[in-house]
Image (tube, rainbow, N blue to C red):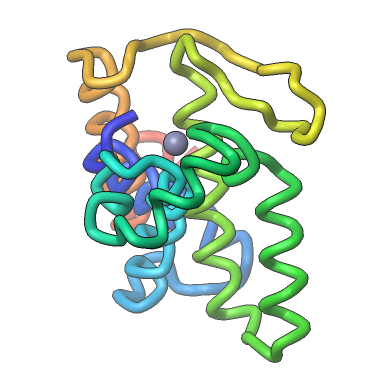
Length: 161
Ligand SMILES: [Zn+2]
């Protein structure tokens, strides 16, 4: 998926997950962290939005592990969270980062290329619903963001059920 879609889906995922974690869904720092987590896995691609800006870091990552490899796995997320928690990073900072990161994996999962979720095993998983950069991707991301925002503001027609 494109960076804009990852940002929209990451923010939406945080707005939906935060209340279940006892945290504020519309807290700007948490939303920012969720958005950061939502684009972080694409550090493995020098032409991605993040990889382009951090090219000195993205190029060696891409050359050694390739795009949609280690950084697009559950292993990378768990290892990073354990390392950050071990370093004393608070749950309030880790939660939105993790939700954003997971949203990235879920979003890439619905593209035909899929993901090696169980890295280092090579098997790729995919639920191909849309191609990267397609109108369907935009509609899915926008629909998810609008629905999550409405739910967070108590405007959802389903919030009273
Ligand atoms: Zn990705």
